View 1 (tube, one colour):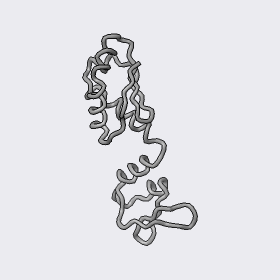
View 2 (cartoon, rainbow, N blue to C red; view 1 turned 60 degrees about the vertical axis):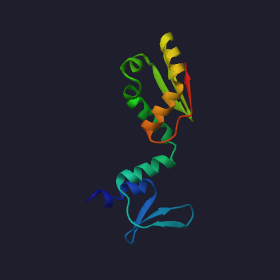
View 3 (spheres, helix red, strand yellow; view 1 turned 180 degrees about the horizontal axis):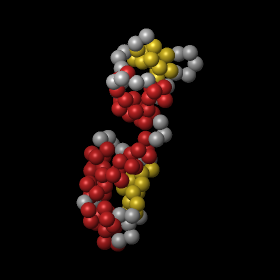
View 4 (tube, helix red, strand yellow; view 1 turned 135 degrees about the horizontal axis):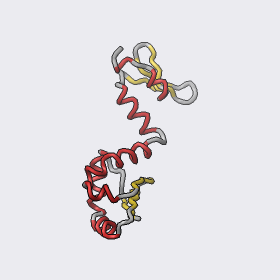
Length: 127
């Protein structure tokens, strides 16, 4: 069974296969027909982008690439990184690092948005 023919993921995202087409179930008895098929990756991306899980997934992605974005030294002394809405919160207890991060806010925003592939962060708050 190939990746394109699995229907389990589509049922989670409320997609049903009918007569060779994938149909997205809408409230009531209305259906929106999509021509063609989705891969599992495309279905998961679509599901996550429309659910409340998107912010959590982005927070995990930022934590995973933080060392690559900012370097080993900064990553070592960064205690916590969270994202709430369009704000990135960075927590560190090292005063010189806080000062350095304050000067680099624009660069942090640019690098994080590049790593995520979309404009997610608009403001950086350093605690």
